[in-house]
Image (tube, rainbow, N blue to C red):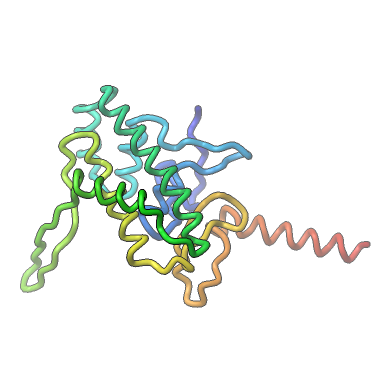
Length: 210
C-alpha cells in the first residue's frame, strides 16, 4: 500500500491529515477515504510513531529510539491493534455524540480505564518569573502510546460543545468548528470545499441551460 500523495499548502503533515483542530479528531482522521476506498494511514508501528511525531507528541529522536526499542515486536503490533480499535470505537461514539446522544457508559469506562493504566503526567515549566504547567507522557511500553489518545478523547467529550463537532459534508473526516459563526461544513477548502463549490457551479450552469 503506497502512501497518499501530499501537496504543498494542503492539510497534510508528513503524510497525515491535521485539520480536526483537536487531537482526538485528528486521530479519527488517520483512516480517510481516498479514491472511494478507506485508506489506513497507521499501516504499521513505524507509521504510528510517525503520526505521533507529526502530532508533536514525541520528538524525532524519541520516535527513532522507540522504533529501535520496540520495532516489529509482538507487543508493538498488539498496541497498534488496540489503538486502531480505540479509534474505530471513538468514531462510532463521535458520530452519535454529534447528533446529541449521550456518551455510552462503556466508552466512559474504557477511557477511564485507559487513563488510569496509561496516565498523562504534569510538569512545571519556568521562564524567568513566569511559570506554567504542561501535560506530557513518557512511554515506557508500547501500550503507553494510548495515554494522549484516551486523554484527548475524554477532553473532547468533557469540554467541547457537541454542536461544534462536525463530519465533513463531503467526506468521512471530522473536525471541530472553531469559526465565529459556527457554520463550517467542510474538512478544508483544499480537500472538499473547492470540490463542493465547483460541483455547485456546474449544477447551476446545467440548470440555466435546461
